[in-house]
Image 1 (cartoon, rainbow, N blue to C red):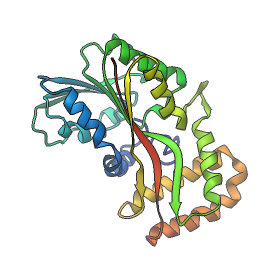
Image 2: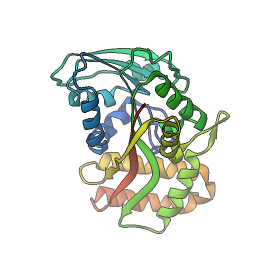
Image 3: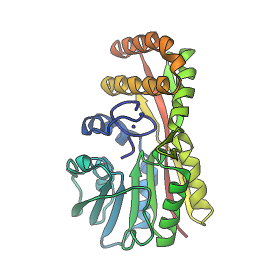
Length: 281
């Protein structure tokens, strides 16, 4: 899940539009290149000798987290793919080449109310680009459930609110600030964490005695990913303008200039994310 109005996806590096399979497909190779394999190496050591893993992927989308992680784990695996969007669950597939058997089931369900009882029999909780669209209370309850159930959790691609574009423009800072405000907005009575999510999940686990590791996982923009970069840019600017309508006039020329730079292959940059691995004591 976790990809949102910055483009047709749903994370804080996006914005708030529909969570379409097309957007998830477009971003999948960039996500895969960004995620930290160092944290996975710790999981491999942690699960050494296990006969079978049960992995619950929250906000699974079409299953890209499973397609990335499953081949990196040598154990037989059963994935429980959970999302609140039935249309996305209908597109879930693994399509992996793994040395061990992998089975999959899908479940429709809310993502902010997982309990320790729900995690009974679970070996690992995963989520990608999800935490930013949760509230502080939901993140804290998720951490509490994992610790109570003694289940490790791997949360990848949590947005930091940091964007670096080259060549830089003075207006970059205005768009970044407005976009980050948008990600922290109140939606349906819930204040979203946006770029505050990584610090919140680390605090929630550490105060319960879990061991926590954080690794950078920035998106790399430009290069061979021009289509994704253009879609990301439209959504990033669109969310900023939605938050601060006074930026509308200036943003039009800025967006045209930046899109021209992308098409010409002159724009590169990065969107800051981190991956978090928490292992209960």
